[in-house]
Length: 417
Image (tube, rainbow, N blue to C red):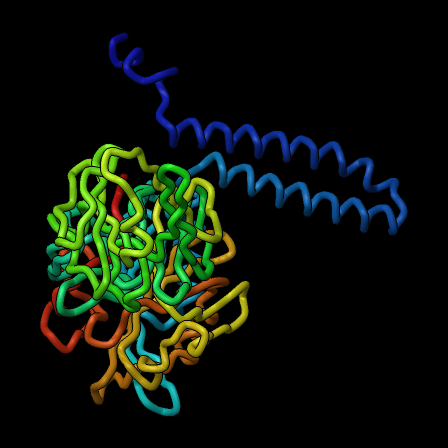
């Protein structure tokens, strides 16, 4: 009795799915039996129409069964991966996650490619960017980043400044904007029910006592002395040095606590604004201040954003906008990293080895065509070259020039909920 009460109706999910499947099949058989007599009296035209309707009903029935049975959904996923990569080495990582190793030839030269394909809903998985530490100015190996987040898969993420480790471009984690866009480069947005890709720009401003000041970027290194930048505690304990004729405004709990040319400490409950004295120097100590930050497009309910560039695929078509995103320095054959997704929201991560005889690397257009060939509808290039490294369940699966991969600022990580 106790055993029966510990399982609702005495059945587990698989047993319930089997019973439902049996009842469904019995109902189909009954309908087919009843329909046979009717079909005999039909004209040829009606029989053809009846057969078409029957085929549609069977297809709908199969879809219903797949939704009811996780086992059938998993079998469908496994088969589709096997069919897509018939000559590849395919390894199971977790339910709904496959690691694929393949060697392709481009212009007669070999290229080793590691792919992770995942159905996030099937495996109860989470994809997000992960920093090397709790501050932006830090670097760690991908193994350490993966262990920090208890991840089963990790791929190097967005570009970063080698001297400091600070990410270059848009980075949002759990709804918090860590760094702002650079040159409005393309980024991947992660939502509860899927993904989107777009070029991202910043719409930010501070308002105080009737004054409105545009914020040009957040937690990024300065590119122009005339820009007004904002630094949060994620940057570190103090803001960077002011530019010539620049001033700094420290804000704590939405109130201005200091205005000066000196380098300001960043309040734990606030931020520091650094910009031309003619702008930020007009703000007054003791006044309330409001920060308004939006990204464009204004993705509603976006959870994570990770930038890269350039585009590889846009709405199913090859689209490599190197010039628009100021990325001429990364053309040619190189190790590459990419992220994309399919029409049915499967996640695709790719690491390409290069700069060696056994794997010469890919151009951006070759990478775009490859991402298209494996079913991606949208995809972007991530940081590559010496940064390209892929981790799967404790192991580095590609062959970076530096054993284990160079220390990284951030990574895209895949974890089980």
